[in-house]
Amino acid sequence: MLTAPTPTGAGWEATLRVSVRTMPHLLDHALNAQRPGWPDDADRRPVVAATTTVRLMMDAAERASGRIAVGLADARFDAWLPAAPAREVAVTIAPVGPDRLLVTFAGYASAQVVVADRYPASRPARWPVDPAAEQPPIISARDFYRERWMFHGPAFQGVTALLGHSAHGVRAVLTGTRAPGSLLDAAGQLLGYWIRTQARDGLVLFPVRIGGVRLYGPEPAPGTPVTCQAWVTWLDDQWVHAHLQLVDGAEVWAEVEGWVDRRFGLDPALDEALRHPDRHPFALAQPGGWVRVTEQWPDLATRELVLGSVTGAAERADHDATPPPARRAWLLRRIAAKDAVRTRLWAAGHGPLFPAELHVTDAMTGTAGAGSTGAGSTGAGSAGAATTVAGAHGGALAPFALSVAHDAGLAVAIARPATPASGGVGIALARIDPADAGPPHPPGPPHPPAGPSRLDRSGRGGPSRGPAAAPARRGRPG
Image 1 (cartoon, rainbow, N blue to C red):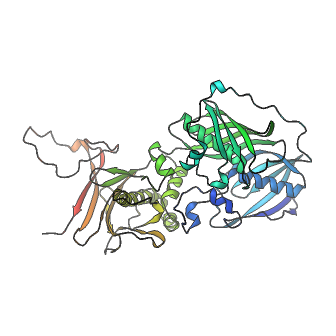
Image 2: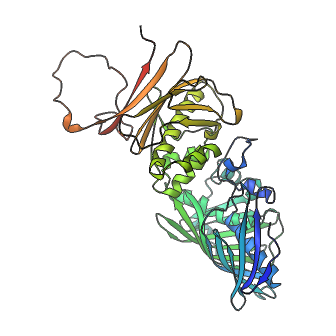
Image 3: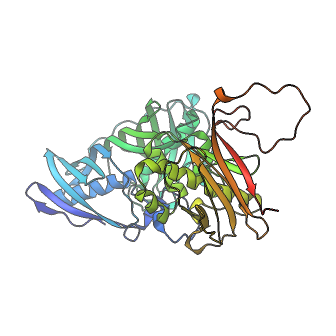
């Protein structure tokens, strides 16, 4: 993983080799769930945990200085460090003061590591606990992972018992594994539990900074139960700030000051889809068998989370080759196409189906105006088809007739099983200006509706303001 540091004029340099082969535990720190046996590790998006980065930085400082890492200051995590495909990261280690070394993983993270000849001779007192101010856990530690409140696999499933929470923090029993940094990672995961007891949105958290870490002894051996108390000092729409104390037996092992998580602004309606993408769609099913999806992510970082959840590697390469102004429509159209097919399959009794198991080919990548539509069918590959869906990595998928349309911030799709007698399907979007609406019809006999009622962007029926979707089945003339 980390090569031996070599001296330079300004300190030392080394190379960090990151891959799932050299660091197999990172397969249990993968952001995206995929079906068992999925052949492309990149689709799982395994990344180096922030606390694994901390441990590797401490290892680098210890190997360069020949001393013990007893703490860390101003750790910054600038970007996720993927483990698939494999990569090499330049590491620099430079003295920045007495007993301090600045360790930098170029392009990804940096921190000042505090080194000493021995651990501190004394330890701080344990933080007080007021059980009367706590509420009992709302989920078990087992379900904490099984329900994917945390995405972590076994090597990072270190929360073994939740003890209680309050408006200001949470307590739990943690158990580290052999994965580097797993014990501190489990401590940070407690904030992911706490936010779900206190908020209805912004429930996805990732660490971006740690103000300081103080270690008072060697890390407890894997399997040792450690009590952790997290004390939240600040919460707003974007950030969670907390301090953490980890106690081994009766003695404090570590304290973390200024753990900062960023809150990702994912719409609460997408929470189940992000946690269980094999069972829940990102698009909203509509009466009449079509689906609609709107941009429910407010920034690029959150959109990237959704992109990783719904696409495979080949699709992401296509996304990256798409001009940036067209990428919003690119993603919405693929979500709509996949969920139009998935909702049909689920309704027919199909089992779990991840979005990446379907590969969408879409000829329409531009920011088309209102009324644009693409139509295509899986399997047969109709001439001139704009949008098709096939099973990824050789997966079997019955033919579907498919149509997709989009406008600014909105995509709709409709899918039907394709048979020789069924013909195609079509769906379109049209902008309706309320000023162009005519006067109300005079009272008269009722008429049967010509098709599904139009919906506004909230999904409720009634007069439309903005694009309206109108699905129309295209059959054989006659």
